[in-house]
Length: 176
Image 1 (cartoon, rainbow, N blue to C red):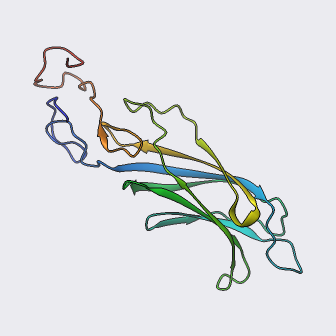
Image 2 (image 1 turned 90 degrees about the vertical axis):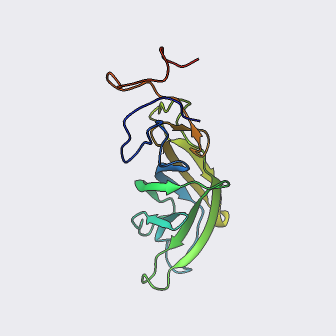
Image 3 (image 1 turned 180 degrees about the vertical axis):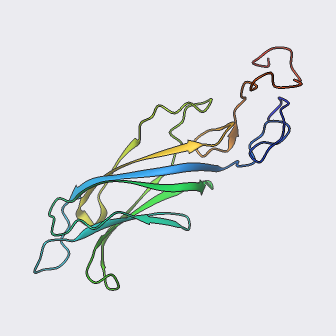
């Protein structure tokens, strides 16, 4: 549990505990793929839809491509991370927008890309999956909120006080 004293604000309690426990900021990068066949008479007009809980985002359509390259970074914002949280990637063939064809789906478990203490190494966690017999290359970055850590941002991580920090319950940092 949190045990340092700090001024409460919208993100932290007076004990420096995050009010956002079990949430993180997620960005997904969809690099590219191959191996899908949409319509029989033309090349695939592929796009990828990313789903986490009730949040969705999608890439632009790569028109008439056998090996679509998106290089799209999708900011999913703050997402809830219940136990077993998963990232769903759907590959679609765009037709008219209302009758698009689902080519394949893959799901991967999410895990924070931050280290204990909240340090982010600046790199995406690489991913590879095979929806609908194709090959999809992607990556994601899941960053826990302030004072949070662990694979799904449920663990409290002691933080050094900011500035003079006001009153402390401990005489030295980190507390022993």
